[in-house]
Image 1 (tube, rainbow, N blue to C red):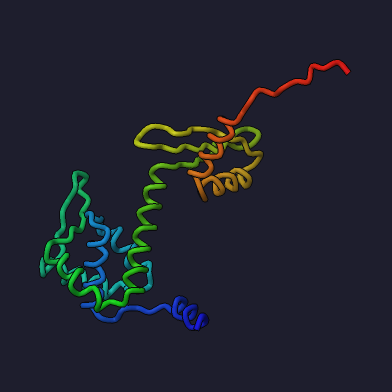
Image 2 (image 1 turned 180 degrees about the vertical axis):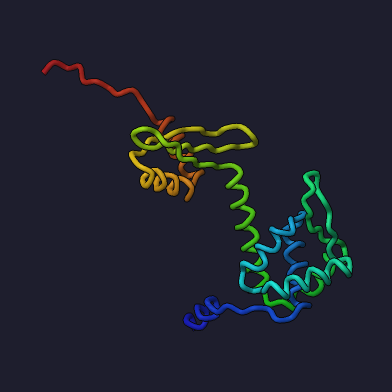
Length: 195
């Protein structure tokens, strides 16, 4: 039984019905519950290998024409898709026509996508060339304030990039370890006994 579960998880199926794709897109917009840029929605939907480009485009056209999705422009003139009440009703009422594994995969992909966007906006790693090596400049923001802004020396670009990659794997953990070390740092005690 366990092997069947593993096989079903590894299998990649693509939806081949524009109506099912439309329901899935409405479901995703309902679950994330915020306007989303057209390019972002495309990247999320097509990167899952559940929805191909052509069915995605057809579904978006249908959803816009039947007023399930509206297009709004933000203050930066970026077009965003907004789910209407009709689209929300579609998501709630018809979600069971799309297999739960597809719904979960699409929502999971969206959550990872937005988490990565947030991380990219809050954490930066730059490599600054020096005469004798590189600085790895690590900066972590929180609500527009620097939580940490530091430079680490590396003798060459390969090592600098390795340090940067390791920091980006878990920037919050890296920051936490630095804080723990700083808070636990104590003056070294000297043995003043005369032996």
